[in-house]
Amino acid sequence: MARSPFSVDDLERLKVSAGFTEEDRRYLQLAGEVLADQTKQIVERWRSGIIAGIPHLAKHSRTPEGNPIPEYLAASNLRFEQWIVDTCMRPYDQDWLNYQQEIALRHTSAKKNKTDQVRSTSCVPLEDVIAFVAVMNQTIKPFLAAKGHSQEEVSRMHLAWTKALQLQLALWVEPYSREHSEREF
Image (cartoon, rainbow, N blue to C red; front, side):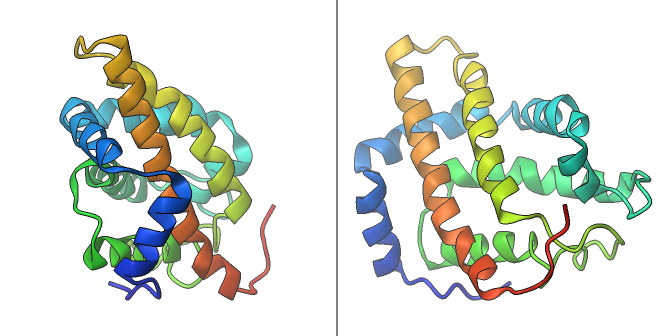
């Protein structure tokens, strides 16, 4: 796994910038408990229900000729499911920072396709990653509400989730800022 150029002190600074508090951490933990048995449905919603219908996003899980790569989708869906749980449940420490660096690199030409040894697009453009976070934030709310928590608790879990994704985006930008490969549109 890649080593993050960010330290835990850097992360603490970013938490302050995002307004991520201990209360957010508690509600994010609760969100993890709520989402843990729904990750497959969430990823199916994102992948099959949304990404598959957007050609410039769907192509990043296909061959350059546009053919599906089922084994790649299966493996990356499992990682996507794990990422949901890890976003909510893992401690935000140096190991988590390293994990974020690895996630980011796997979307750039530095590591995309290498883990699964597939032939697909060379990178996912950063602007698409950033824009899709809005979709993930919007579509997660019904899953957070699925276990009968109060509207206030759901809102607090959702806010904590949103802040957690903003923190991750702040970290994911770094490999892209170093990379000068050609972008694919």
